[in-house]
Image 1: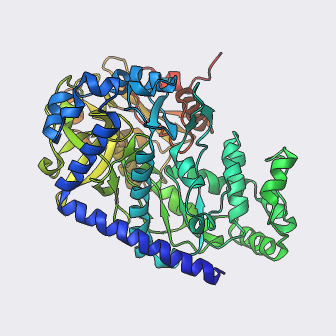
Image 2: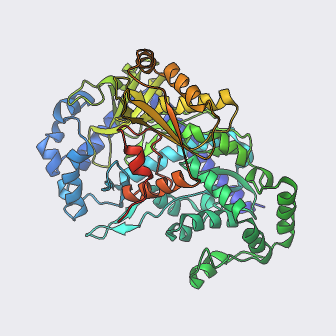
Image 3: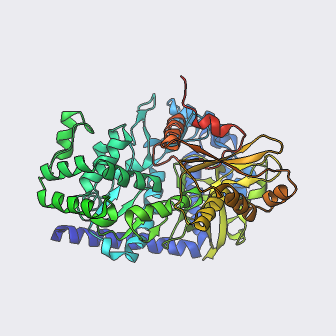
Length: 551
């Protein structure tokens, strides 16, 4: 049970978070003062750097000035400046006297990860966004207050720059520096993030959590939650023995010193082990929905992540799910304020935002729109300028507008820009592919399954759906029809026979998970950052991704 001191500390933290939330809501109604403040910060932070002098940043006074002074930039165009900072030359991108906390690593489409400079101001902005999100979430779910939290984060110091600055996941930094009253309720411990074996990390989080009153689980990727639950079930015999004895099995933590650190505070719990054994015998499966009294879940639900929601319910129960928002190592874009929707309001306090109409997303010099100019139902690519030093940066995410709250647009993440397949002019997006497969699952009354979709050359060319195990004989026909319903151009090309019927290919169990592991390692991403490419855009890419490396 929470102590009196914890209740008092929680009230103080709650009062602070309420002030943060009120300022956030006010900014949605009056964004201009906020935008002026952000521009002033950017001038101070970057104005006297080599980059700032090149583009005359000290003369920038308005978002319009910024558009005229600095061209739209991809990461590769900014990479030379960032790599100079990485090597120790901070003046390439930052004014004299500015310091770095770390570099956030972000996976890209190549093996060379992005390095995002993290300044103290960026940490404050990132934390403020999380505080705003958390305050609204816990206000809506008060049963979760002062109860245990199952959360997963990676190391902030997985490597170091030549100048000795740590590099890793910014979520790891936030977890380590979180307020003590919040950290007190974390199930996980910082040492877990240092384990390279994902299965060991999943097991440990569940081992430490299964003896506590967990109120909710939060992680970016819903696949992580599913893997955690599945690992606990598959390792249930070991788990029950560890709970009974107050131990952690050496096969997951061979290092005695680390094992002693992780077991500190654990006690034998034979009664809890007996309860769990009875649950397993009764249901045939050990599932979080049965052994925790959960209030909600928090994870990504937009884009291809929505494909995991059915399996999430199977493991965790029919709970409200709060999307954590469109956020990346480069910054937060949206803050969702309601359950069971991927739509969130633009975080106007975190950056200067611009938007490119989706049909012009790949154009070299498109015109950009302000947040107030977005139209409901239209799709846009996100551009941001923030305290990482990334100015007019093409984030690479496509969103759909759903109206406004105050003067801030409500946005839904759809997919990464450029993930569009077109072998006959159909311009099929990943969002459409995921929606079609989910519709087919509902129509055939089957559970959602792991899949990848890719075009194949032929006469005519067609698409191939790869999935594990046996599938219904009509799956290809039903998915093909669903794709036609999602994409008029796909329907037109099927009707004119410029595209052939979709085919289905079965692969062995674990093949797609093995592909995920290889791609995640190649891209330098953590398990939380990695998003499976459900749609491959070039013929043969699915074969290459599924094929184990021979190196």
